[in-house]
Length: 313
Image 1 (cartoon, rainbow, N blue to C red):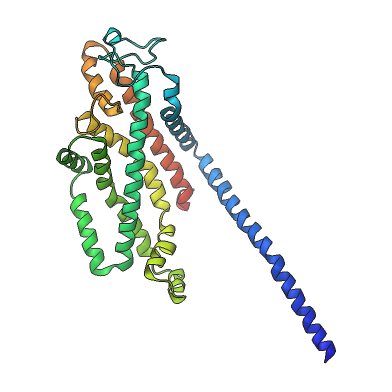
Image 2 (image 1 turned 135 degrees about the horizontal axis):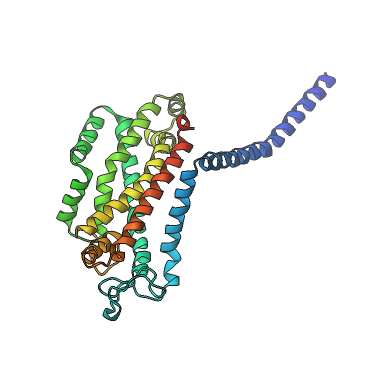
């Protein structure tokens, strides 16, 4: 009996030591998995050369908007009629407009405004649309029908016409431009997340979470929603460029940011009048930056889609 007792104590001691030793191993494997996922992300993304170029170009525009004002001595809103309509030169790299304002300076400050509009609008639209779509898909039935038909009433109109109507009703301002972009983009994110959760809500891990006592709210926001966001990331990267283009369109038509604030679309509108007399630079450079930003965000979105969608690898 003493021998058997001794034997049991030895086995218990060995098992206890194995349990203690297993914890650092589990932590290391988790770190390895996280590191491996980042390596895999970079590896897949780097294979798409156009996406890398788009990402670098987008990074350049963002940095230009953040630190560019440190490299210019001109005011973006102060006019100087003595320097009106000067062509590009060593003093004014992109020339001046009809009011004598330095176009390079205004393009830099306009990047700040357009990036601010796009970032706030896309984040708000993605958050509101994702939560809206998750609630609709998770509870389903009558609630789902009512919520989706409400979105259909917005999507019945072309995005640009709906945006123009809302902007005209609210009035021209930076805040109203953001509101317009959020309202127009929410249905897209809601439908993306809804389609994902309709598929995932029947998965075994949802039944397991419900069996251990998780509430519907916890299941939806802790288990379903985080697993439904991959297409949202891709769409958001594409939507940033579209939001800048939409904001520029509203400002071009006089329904967005107002003068003398610098904004790419507003600068194109003001410069278009000067192209008649040969001042091509007033509209060319802000229009060029709109083109570069939209193209770069689209290329970056294609690269992210390669990462999150296994069918494209």
